[in-house]
Image (tube, rainbow, N blue to C red):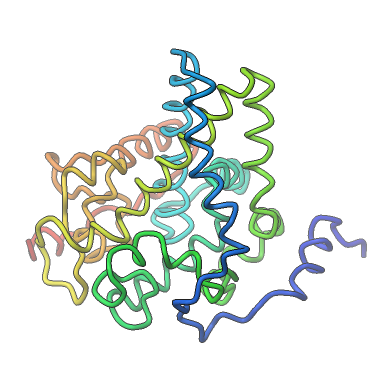
Length: 292
């Protein structure tokens, strides 16, 4: 029987994988590995030389919206929590869009998030403000060597797909192709605004859920962690700011449990359901309203 070339390539790289099942991260920073992360931030200052245009800013905003939805709707609510179902083709398309956000591959992202829910705000939670402080919870944790590998034991339901393993192993490929496409479309101005500025804003907007969503806002539910609900964070992150709701019932597709809790990601997922791209959206459990 012939072996799929893509699967064979991924399996070869798996021989170099690190078993992270017992790792909780470390405060040590690997500056060599973090250098690209620093460069992406510094590149934003190039707007001084390339200037701006309505087209460039529009591309930046558009890419922020598309990639934010790919992260919140699919990296988070689908790959991390399986809160709805979809086809293998749609799963791959949105995994590619999520990978374009330069937040690593879908398996790495989901594995870390699942561990976060298992150990939220304990010593084993690598991005807990309670345990490690604001800055480490916000962005410092991704610079630690112990958090670089993908703990495949956490994502056994998805690691069987070679295309997802490929995106995880070569997580720099999609962002690189996006940068090249932007250059061909509008030169360096499109690259600086469409990729660097948009990606940095997207990154920090996503990371406020790890940091600020455990520090500011109100607590509807008495969970074991410090998760909180915040309208401001919900608007920034398309609904992810209803974090206390989410930690109480992580399997629900909807994070804004009431009509006044704006959840843009859920509205977009609802439209995809009507278009039959996704289905079986998990409802907010009745006990959630009873407990509230």
